[in-house]
Amino acid sequence: MRQILTSGLLWFSALGCGLLAGLYFAFSAFVMTALGRIDQAAGISAMNAINADIVRSPFMPVFLGTTLSCAVLAVLGGLRWQEPGAVAMICGGGLYVVGMFVVTVVFNVPLNDQLAASDPAGTSAASVWARYLTDWTFWNHVRTIASLAATALFIVAIAGR
Image (cartoon, rainbow, N blue to C red; front, side, top):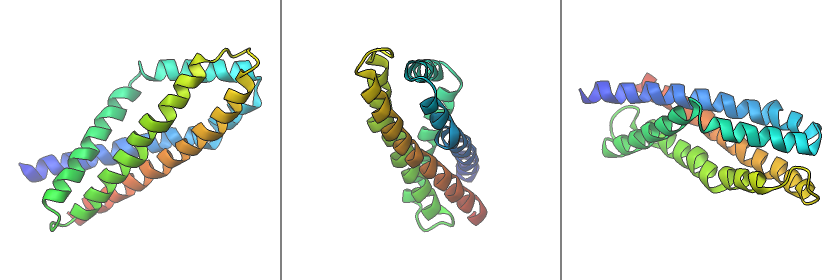
């Protein structure tokens, strides 16, 4: 039973991390660049709309479920560190929780909140938007890399079992 549960968590986590890595990659590769090229008020309004809609979408169950699954895998790997794939589970789970979830909560969400509080047509919006585009995208790159690396580590763990 324990092995079936662990295998299920590994597959769920690998797929969830991969799915979210793809989403973050799209934002890093072209969405933020495109938003930065359009009129400031339109870019801010579009990003605020995305941020409002994403929390009411299927993204949230995947985001939270994958984070929980990864945390459980890190703990399970720590409890059975000598078993095949355990080190990859620890590293993948820890990397994802810190590099994706903690980064999101500590950096991306506060930046989203600051953007939402700004007047898209106001005079201070230009500096808020410029900082947002740079800082949010940097931290999104971190989330992309962490999610992709966690995906790879979970595949290694699956193959090792």
